[in-house]
Image (cartoon, rainbow, N blue to C red; front, side, top):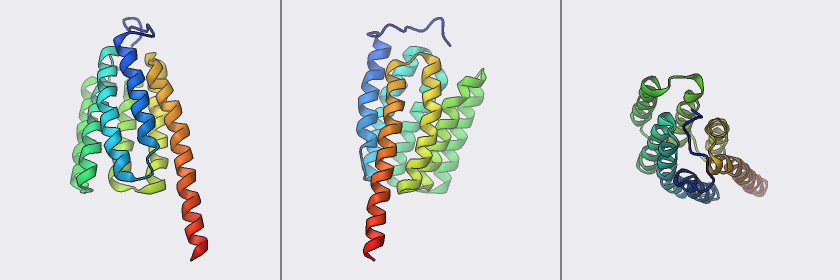
Length: 176
């Protein structure tokens, strides 16, 4: 990680990072879980290409798992799918993570898998906020401009959406 990476602000890698940034922000503006998952799928594909161009195999592979996870989560919540995705993520980590920082996207992807399949609403978004912090650290280490901005904005947008959902839930509870 580091020396061989292209950090030019207008390199193809960084431009894909900017696109992932826009798609990611649009994803976490969604209050509907299905729309969130569908938008994350598009963002993950762009992110995978971005990380591949930056030379991070684990981040690219984790993004592809995120893509698969987001699509599968639209159609099933089966625990065997969770186990399959977590197993694939761990296998990718064992195969490609040759230093501790390379595990950041592996752990982030694992948290995201659990969140997308086993959690809903506010709880899902809180878990995704934890995964976001790991992706943020990864992106800072890689020199990903768009990715760093993406995770900072996703954290802010996701926190705002969590607050909006909590406020709506509190209002509904007060009506009962």
